[in-house]
Amino acid sequence: MNKALLIIDVQNAFNDPKWGNRNNHIAEYNIRHLLSVWRKNNHEVIFIQHTSKNHDSVFHPENEGFLIKEIVRPREDERVITKEVNSAFIGTNLEEHLINQKVKEIVITGLTTPHCVSTTTRMSGNLGYKTYLISDATAAFGVYDNNKQYFDAQTVHDISLATIHNEFATVLSTEEYIESYLKK
Picture (cartoon, rainbow, N blue to C red):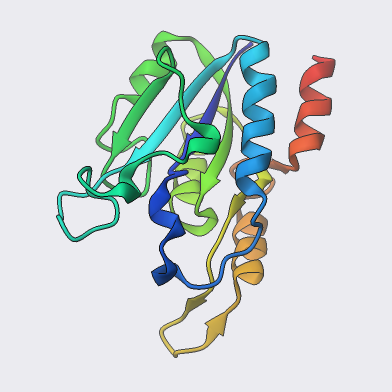
């Protein structure tokens, strides 16, 4: 079965203090570990890079935040797809590329769990791909709701994963996926 690893928005923009408190500070290390195993097995790797037309945005291509973090920097032969919305499937050629490569299984990692990671995972599941979301290769930031109640980053992360698991994807840790993957 053809597989693709999606690494979503692992960009310097998320180092900006404006985001507040974050959970899972080892997410990028887990992504790098999974990426290393993935590359050794010559499976498809696709980097998703968020972009903004707003010059003031940390995601604008002229800003340092636009760059993919060095820890998971793509190789020259790996595909990078830019997107302007939360889903990596909207306004991009991602689905067309996956169809052309006969990909049936998608493994999702990246930033942030409740936003681009969740939205892309939901669409992947809805489009019929066998989808895995790697729980410790994603991270979230704390947020305030419409009533100004604060939810810490770990709670946001955990609830985001819970709403996806067994509905849109199978949620596994990096090691759980690698153990499962290496047995196939």
